[in-house]
Amino acid sequence: MKESNNINISVTLWTLTYKEIRRFMRIWVQTLVPPAVTMSLYFVIFGSLIGPRIGDMDGFDYVQFMIPGLIMMSVITNSYANVVSSFYSVKFQKSIEELLISPMPNWAILLGFILGGVCRGVLVGIIVFVVSLFFYPEFEVANPMLTISVLFLTSILFSLMGFINAVFADSFDAISVVPTFVLTPLIYLGGVFYSINILPEFWRSISMANPMLYVVNTFREGMLGISDVSISFSLSMIGLFIFIFTFLSLYLLKKGTGIRE
Amino acid sequence: MDSYALEISNLKKVYSGGTEALKGISLKVKEGDFYALLGPNGAGKSSTIGIIGTLVTKTEGNVKIFGYDIDENVAVAKSLLGVVSQEINFSQFEKIIDIVTTQAGFYGISNSIAKPKVEEMLKRLGLWDKRNDQARTLSGGYKRRLMIAKALIHEPKLLILDEPTAGVDIELRREMWTFLKEINQNGTTIILTTHYLEEAEQLCRNIGIIDHGEIVVDTSMKDLLSRLDVQGFVLDLEKPLDHVPTIDGFELRLDDPLTLVTATNKEKSINSLFNELNRIGIKVKSMRNESNRLEELFIEMIKK
Image (tube, rainbow over all chains, first blue to last red):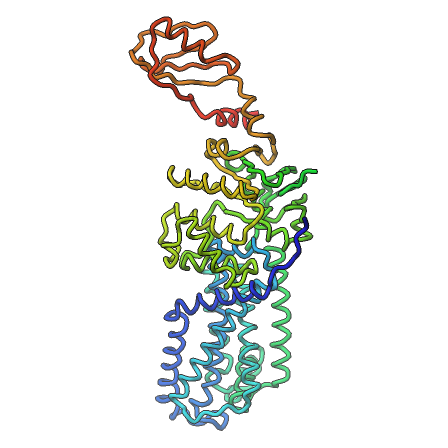
């Protein structure tokens, strides 16, 4: 008797997503608390203590100017970290076999991990925003629709990058190299703490090649209504890279790179 | 017409380093069978199982599970298959109940349907009392049980066990045998790899031996055992002997003054040996097989 292909994909997808959420919620002290603490320190030191001496930045109080950048920094690092550590862990513990043996299609496996990363990224973003309100209670979001869109798109993009990193990673060192030596410097130099308008011409041109600048500034446009870059160009680039990384991830899963012998 | 749980044809695997793990094996396992796949370390057993479970990419050949090709109908083929891997492959930090419920979810079984199934499975395997413990706290034997629970939660029609009783104590091993016999009687086809040849002899009806990436034997257990011409028996004596007695038709040797060992053709009645020993005044207290019969054949097969 022939069986029919009646696997309930929505159940498989929810199962993996819920497993991913359960994972980062189980270790909330490691995943949700540190961004709140670190960002509080940034707000205290750069916002409340040093900020008044700096004065305005693009017409906004310095602490107000920093808020979108710090939220984006947290969203990027947490989305990336969630997927890279989770996917590498299932590889390392061989529990990836549970998924590979199951009838889940590759796109559902990818989507499950990405949704896990997005949930953590967005949740951390909300936490940092709530923390920022303690330091700048009168903050108002200029364009909520754009803010929410960029929040989710950025989270998806960096979750995908984390996934690709984890696919190629063959040690715990390999999953920390990119965040430490690539992401963090690019984020710090991507306009989180300053507007590129204060830079000399040469450094401003160099900064334009930093992809983080576009992500941070598009989010700042949503939250404050100001940006150093073209919003339509930034959104197109984010969309294009999500598209490219999605297909690359699916190709790697199909090929079995790093997960099948 | 026979229907097959597993059909493998011309399966080849060459690893990236150039190692040829499988040299074009073909194998058929009938629906409802309890099949032993034996072979020395590195023979190709795990590569074969890995390919069936799509954990290893094949170089060439076809695999069908209940007629469904793992390339063309992968989702249906996988939903009919359960695999108990040799190595522990669950998250050590999750609760036992969550691991099994999640595994059911990966097969599209919703939480409400999975819940009673998980409870039944965990109770059946003696894991229910530990359901809220983290998996890493389990002993080796319980981890093996959890692997079996995970593999069976979606009620596969074909279950493959890759050395499920490795490192498990005798009591638990016997319990697992009973459990596996039961699920086989209820219709699940089982393929077992093991290094305990006694296990294969006890459980399996048919047997394949793989060596250097080739199937060297594929037959019934009964047929394979019937190929054994000579059987060895160890006789524990009542009184010590100072020399080896001579009895026509039997090769005898003394391992120590109280232990007489005989190698006898299986066509020859063991009664005649006892009659002769009795006649010359040698009393036997007890008797046992010299060694596992299948073990001897196995060694012989892989030497060829």
